[in-house]
Amino acid sequence: MFDSISDKFSGIMRTFAGKSKITEKNIQDAVEEIKVALLDADVNLRVVRRFINGTMEEALGEKVLKAVDPGQQFVKIVYDRMVALLGDEENQKLLLKGPDTTTVILMMGLQGSGKTTTSAKLAARLKREGRRPLLVAADLVRPAAILQLQVLGESVGVPVFTLEGEKDPSKVAKAALSQARKDQRDILIVDTSGRMHLDQTLMDEIQKVRDAIKPDETLFVADSMTGQNAVAIAQEFEQKVGISGVILSKFDSDTRGGAALSLRSVVGKPIKFIGVGEKMDDIEPFYPERIASRILGMGDIVSLVEKAQSAIDEKDALRMQEKMAKNTFDLQDYLDQLNNMDKMGSMEQLLEMIPGAKGQISEDDIDKAEIRREKAIILSMTYAERANYHIMGPTRRKRVAAGSGTTVSDVNRLLKKFEKMRLTMKKFAKNKKYQAAMLKQMGM
Ligand code: GDP
Image (cartoon, rainbow, N blue to C red; front, side):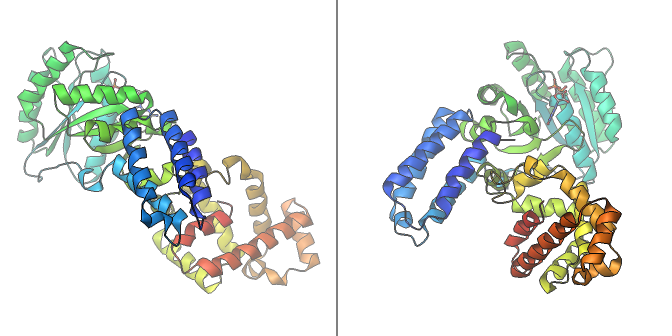
């Protein structure tokens, strides 16, 4: 996701972060590079101009040029502005009423934008949060839409309201709302029709639905892969129907980032969620700070820690931290970590989140064969050896190499790497920020 822009930014940021002295010319050059990166990412021209001018003005101020660490200051300015561009976290949440009234959510967007899928994902998410949603199939245009929603609803255990034979979506929506209230369903999610292109009929239809059910949230589902086009369509929906928030679908396939970076600023409405895959739990709240960090190639420590925590048992993580701090982390623990990595998902995703890893190591650099070899070596060691590899003289090393189908130099390499890792851990274990660096050191 965002590969190109993120590569460019992390390059710019890296040259700057360490600089102890910067000149006006340095700033001008960097800002020019940022401009090109943003335009390449298909960010709206007006947004780019504003971003660039603001950054330039702030960076040329005394604060940066005279700062002790001007490079850091510059990076911070760019980061803060990027966060502001993406939104503010206060507005990201859905406005949900208490469980004793029905909150109405109207979903809209062009055909193929991911509206139906997103409706079901949202229902599943709210259900997990303890709500009782009801989905409504009010897309009466696309032939398979009702069936699609029924199938998805069933898969996430959320009922789907349909009205056989009814051609007027506003009537379907209204009947669904009565039904929801009767059944004490506290959330109604209405999937409306899309079209291939914007047309008046669609707008009229959605306005009618809107007037019939008076939604609390009117969410526009935008296909992030369509970049500037998504922004233009969102603007149109905002003018004709009014939107309260945006869900960016297919964020996982968005390689440029133009829609994410322009939408908030152009349309003035928050991005509330992102769709990150085709599966029903592939929906996440949109966190401007995290996305900004990723775009800038600064890594996303918070996401990484959360991800690691959900994969590793929290107690495990604490135990591991303590071991690192006390320097009692042994090869058995390392083996556990290697096994945990499988649970955490793809390397590429992880790498994106590790500060400084972007552009420094790529997935290709991580030698999967090496990891397999390391696992085999540790498995061939006795528990006593895993606990204290210092007891491993040449004979033991030879035995382990033979047992794991590797060579003595493979064994030596692992032990050397492990020694280095322990040293790093000892140094950094007390500092949270460096936990990510440790992961990197472990080859993760
Ligand atoms: P609708 O016409 O707007 O209702 O669109 P659909 O919900 O049918 O989605 C169109 C296609 O996009 C389907 O193949 C979905 O699986 C896919 N899709 C939807 N959301 C996402 C997402 O967040 N990521 C990915 N990769 N695919 C998605």
